[in-house]
Image (tube, rainbow, N blue to C red; front, side, top):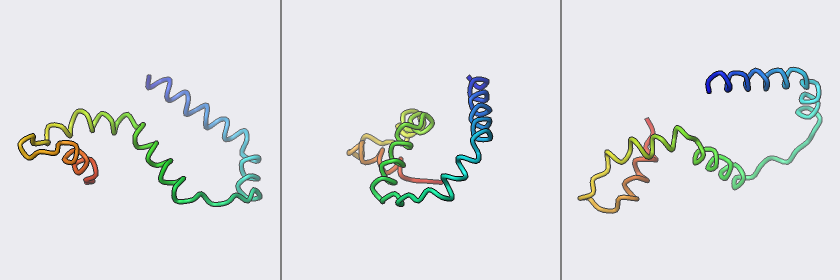
Length: 85
């Protein structure tokens, strides 16, 4: 799996190198309206929810810190999931 991922990254790099002039033209000349807050929030949410590492942590690590005696388990998981280092 690691080897396939490495090959894919090499492929992306080669494609970027081959089409660099087209990409530069799009970045410099192509005027695009900035994305709105809703679009940015939605894209970030989708990336975060579909991240396998995040799902693994949420399902394997966080439940051991939940105390059923305190009640409202979904709220406890939400608070624990929002805490950052």
